[in-house]
Figure (tube, helix red, strand yellow):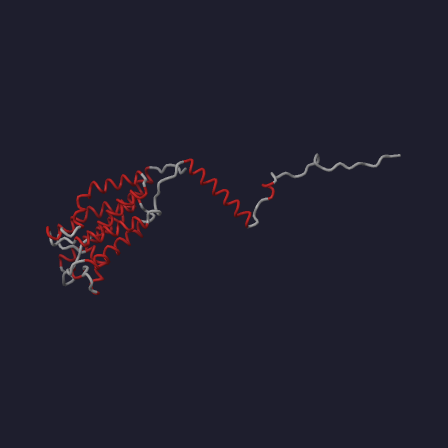
Length: 253
């Protein structure tokens, strides 16, 4: 059993996990400021995703940083900060890969199913994070991660309705296709990575059984490689003086 980690280590780990989240959101706000000032000579919206157009593929990379209004970028800021932080804190070993695939998959799906207008914003990535965190905890059946799933569902569960097409009738400016693409991406990646990253620990009796099995396998490998210690098999027993053969001397006549 590993010794418990100290509070100083956990605090450092929490800050390190928050760093990618902070950097991403900072870049998003920088992009918004650049767009609003017009220093590039035009709107950044043209760098969004234009579905089924080759020129629109570049939006897969750039659209999460581009937002159409202050309320748009603000509505994505807090979810990005929290959900990205959760990802890098609770799933640190797979966080970078999972985040990259969420980014690319959600954008590619939006490019494939979206309406013929520019799709911008980080909402697709937010939904990918949301669904990944929720289903990853449930699939692992590990109570701390299930608790994370429930917290995520409690905070952002009400937004799930915006992944359905009827959202377009309520507000045509919302990219329900981007939300749905993110949700699908997060769900699929939760399944793909279910056996990687943090896992539910085995009961102590199962751990002992696994250790015993590993020892047996190691001994079998040693036998196969000719590395077996003969002394260990015979109990390291060497002949002593008491074990020496008795020699009968010839009798004097």
